[in-house]
Every structure is written in structure tokens, then in C-alpha cells.
Image (tube, rainbow, N blue to C red; front, side, top):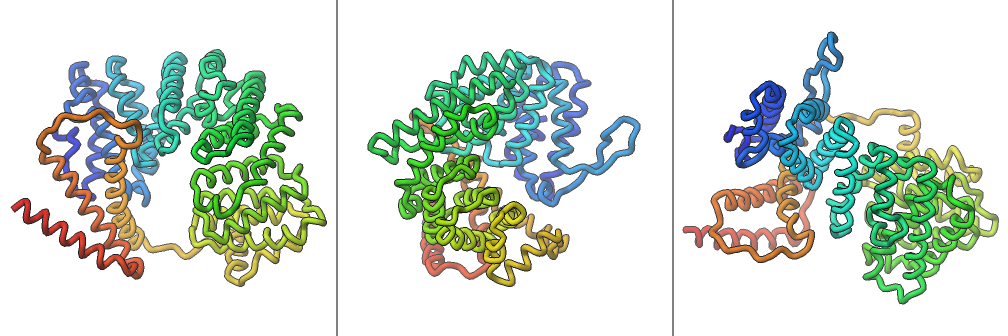
Length: 517
């Protein structure tokens, strides 16, 4: 047991999947064992069986990506069918959770929360799926308790870290699983009209609530969000205070996304009026330089999708002028994706005659640039958005103007015809997965090392001599970084400064070697 649950096994990549399957096999058998045996495994000295599985699962990134499939009997009496490794682990983990003794819930809850907050997105998703199973399998009171704990975590955590996003996704899913009376209690506990609770509500889907509660919460969120925006707009507009504005815009987006049919016309008009005030001062250069303003722009574009048919000539020209100017400054991917979504919604709009001369060339130029984007995710979204726009727009003459090269035209035609692109061979894909695993492992170690620095400063710790495991961890990070650089060099020519930097690092490593000797 101590060997299997060790966090420092140091297994080679090809033995990570067998380790994961060993843990699954043990889980399948453990519920039939005496309570003292279950306690030994679920409250291990190093890791509990829950934590060990999440840790082992994270190491199987290549097998998850390929994906590796395993036989599983889905229905009693039916033959086994191949399912993905993710599906296989999720099914067996949920089955184990269903048999877990109540006295072992602290270890289960710790492992679930630790995995949700971890640096591996796929492991975080597995923990969320398992947690949602627990919420449905357990009592309504347990679900409500977990929802309140998660909401308090979101309120108390700095908003600019990825852990809050993960907690937000989990909270959003869990709200759907709450009993209606517990949802009412949640709305009373985290009053939507109070500013301090807006960071919680920005993550939630109002579709989870019954119609009456949804309408009430949506109106309260709109009033609170609009008040927060107006306070900032009518003040000195300090960028350092913009995070609270972005939270308010996120809340407005949540209300408009899932309660637009229940929002009063007066509130909708107020939202549109406030949005118009933002466009009067946003400048492309400032947005390009300030990440907080980039987030503001993305939220504004998403909000405008709900009111795009009600826009007048001036806001339409302002929005497109800003996007065109910003695109010349090479905005980051998340801004480009927000632009793509907004352009997709333009298919519903008849552009006024007085705005067409300015807007139409900018619209076609933005679409052409996004369709030619080298980032596969943006390119794919652009293809979908352009197709949606082309099907809906009454400005049919704009469509060919967006396809300003044969390459773009061929890609759009292939997409519409659902033509499959040339696929890499199994051998090439396997080799790529191996290289990506090295890069991911190095990144996970780097991110996990930063977890303590994302919150408030920690209290000083007593000095102690570093352990052998700490040395192994540090050296492992160095090895992972070296492999990542090797991978980059295979993909293309290095920048001019790399040779000098490597020489500096070489000297630093030589000094370390000499000090060890």
C-alpha cells in the first residue's frame, strides 16, 4: 500500500497508465474489504487512494489525448465495448465514491478540491464530474453545503487566478443540482443586490433557477451591475479599479444570457445606455497595453450581441472603428475570439445606409483576417462564425469580400463540404504525444510551484534543511525545461538571443556543479 500510494514513484512514461489501472483495480475491490482495510487505503500516510488516482491520472496526458480505449460493460448482460480512458476512470471512480464510508469523506473532499484547483485541466474536469456525481448521489443537504463552501471560496479568493475559473465552472454545474428550496436559501445567503456577492453570481447560469426566482435575481443583478458601472464611469475612471467593473459587466452578461426574456424593457434600455458610454472613451492603443481593458472589451462585445439589432449608427461605427484599429496592434487570442463571436451576430443586422461606407469594408477585412489566422482555435471559430453570418445576412455583397484569397476561399469551401483534412499517421501522432507530455509535465511542475503565491502572502516558515525529494523535484523541473527547449528547436529556427541565454545558463549550472563537489 505504501508503495502504490507513494507520490514519488518516479515511473517512466510507459508505466504511468499501468499505475493508474492498478489503482482502479484496487478501488473496485476495496468496498468488499473490512472497514479497517478501507481506512488504511483511504487515509494513507502519503496520499489517500483518492488523491493517488488523481495524481496518477494527470500523468497519463498522452494516453488521454490519443485516446487509449479500454473495455467496459455498459449494460448488464451486454458485451464489453471500448471506451476512452477518461470515461473508464470516471465510471470506476464514481462507483468507488458511492461505496465510500462517511468517515472517509474528509479525504474524498480534500482530494476533489485539490484536483479541481490543480494545474491540469483534464484532471480538474474529472474531479468536477465526480463531484457532481456525489452531489446527485448524496443528499440534497450535502449538495447545498458544498455549494455554499465553493461560493465562499470564490468570494475570498483573488479574482485574477485560474483556480477561480475552475471553481466557477464547478459552482455553475452544482447550482443545477440543488433542490429548489435550497436555491432560494442560496439567493438569500448571497444576496444578488450586494456588490460583495457579484463575484459569485458572475459564474452562475440563471437557467438553473425556477422562473420566478430567475426573474427576481436577474433584475437585482442588473440593478447592482449597472450601479457599479455608473460609479466607475462617473468617477475618475482609474484602471486599477476596473476589476470591479469587469465583475459588474460579467453579472450583466449572466443576466442577459439567461433571463433576457424576463428583463423589463426599462432595464434593457439602461444596459444599452451604459454600454454606449464605454465606447466613447475606449482607445485601441490603451486596450492593447492594458489586460484589464482587454477583458472589458471582450465583455462589452459579448453583451452587444444581445442588443446588436437595437444599435444606432454611431455605436456601430464606434465598435467597428475600435476593432479595426485594435486588430492592427495584434491583440491576444481571447480578444480575437470575442471579435469572432460579435461578427457572427452581425448577420442579424441591417447596417444603415449612412454607416455602410465605413462599416462594410471593416467588417469584411476583420473576417478575412480572422479566417486567415494561424491559431487553429481562432481559425475554426472564424469558419463557424462566417458560415453563420453568411446564412443570415441581408448584405450578400459582403460575403465574397471576406474571401480575399484563394486559400481562404478553399478553406471555407472545404469546411462547408465537411471535407476532412490530411491526418497524421499513428506513429507521428504517438511521437508528438510523447513530446507534448514532456512539455506539459514541465509546465505542471512550474504551475504547481506557483500555487502558494497566488493568494495572500504566507506566514514565515521555520528554516529546515531541504530534503532529497525537494532536490529531485527541482532537478526534474530543469530536465523538463531542457526537453521543452529541444522540442521548440525541432519546430523552427531559434531567436537570436537564445544562444547567449543558454551560455549564461551553462555557466550557472557549472557553478552549481562545482558547489556540489
